[in-house]
Image (cartoon, rainbow, N blue to C red):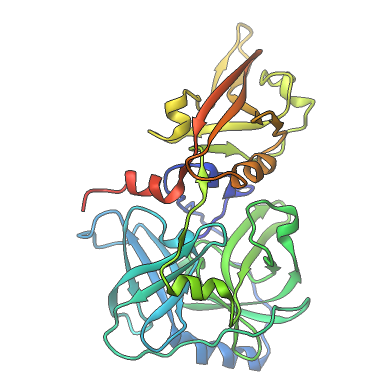
Length: 359
């Protein structure tokens, strides 16, 4: 599993159902020959990593999705990206030797995209140390993951950008970009420096005409977040229950496309039984006009509580600034109509439980 897509799949963070990684068939990317030190880091670190498998039903032979995690203590505590284990499915951990074990989510922080697991191995396990400092520009790194049927394989690269969060509402503070060829299946895996310390957790990829960009959320020893997760903290994020079209649309294009006079966040899908669904928001569709031209029909969220939302990122920022259970009023453009639609924000984990299969 990996948050990925043509553009940013993080548009799904406003949805109420599970965020599932797309099944992308990516062309393998050639990697530069890594330094021997990093190759040695990979060999030493791999025994402390695991594959996380998700199944819709426990009796399934083949998993529906795969992600990665890594041990941080000898008694089976492990870290992964929260979106790897947030879905309503059944999860198990597969160790490097192939043996499978049950797991439990001890704590999570949805905004940070970090989850702490307990993997019930029944014996002591190797584990990875966490770095005491953040990575620096140009640092050589190795990621370990499960993309492309490469079971717990290495992906080498360097830090190419720091502080990505400053331009993305959905990126935790300290998020950094690396040029390692990550892909769906690598989510939750460790990003290690040349000293063999974990500096981040693989979380996002972005696909564009220029290629693949990979992003990791930071992790370090002594982080108060880890202490909170060990104590069972479960920090959810508010959602309204939509998928938002995150492809860039210029403000001038909205009236031309028949979406109304103002720019905003275009609703592409509405999750069943979500706050948006109950409030009457409509998913995007297309139809042909009298001249046979294809026309896009969609609700466009142009404001929340009177604050303009000219794009998805602004909408996400404003939703994230609210509390679960808070009542908000969306200004929705439906063609040439402008509607005031009230709804109550719910927690994403609450939505996951509602959509979970019977156990």
